[in-house]
Length: 283
Ligand code: GLU
Image (cartoon, rainbow, N blue to C red; front, side, top):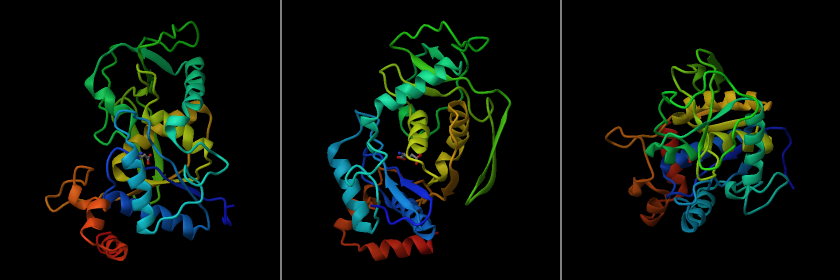
């Protein structure tokens, strides 16, 4: 049973593709603080869309390390809840239904381009997916008679030139122009998996998320997600993006920074309180 006294619903959305690092921990800590301050509910969603990179031992480590740090969620794959399943690999049918709706409304087109960066599309595109040059984009949107062949990618046709504006709870007003700051992005991959963008929009709506707290590397993705939500006729949540932690060389922390993984820090004997102090001083 939820102890929530408000309608605020936040989420932690880690991917089990490596050990979580200090940067994730800090973002998740902020997410928890915001949920607690609002008297709301926190959901943990296992973003294991990528079957090749998601691994059971990372999944187990991710839940253990977050609990060790003092995080606590009221709904999730390990505790259940009314909006499950909370594991993306078990939600294929929900994504497919959304894909169908987008297709019927003329938002999608098939793409035959082969690009090695497509592997990036089903997780958070932290390195960004670049602007698709439009090779397979038909001159006009099609709402019927599209050949729904398997084995092709499907892209979302962005409204070129439209400015997508939103207020970020941390960074203030944001503005990205479709076609200039980002292009037609992937929603479905040729190997029959949804992209990160589609999965996250569908899940945030289905799980009634009212505020998304995540890293600043996803600010531009928020513009894509606002377009997807609009096309699907669902309400977008509020947004709160957090500063990214950097290492001594000024590089953004990544899962390859083993020494700064929660696992590594635990093994070095660090205590959760010490990490929380770092968040406060570097925050
Ligand atoms: N699962 C994504 C990640 O690893 C985060 C997605 C999101 O918060 O929207 O980084």
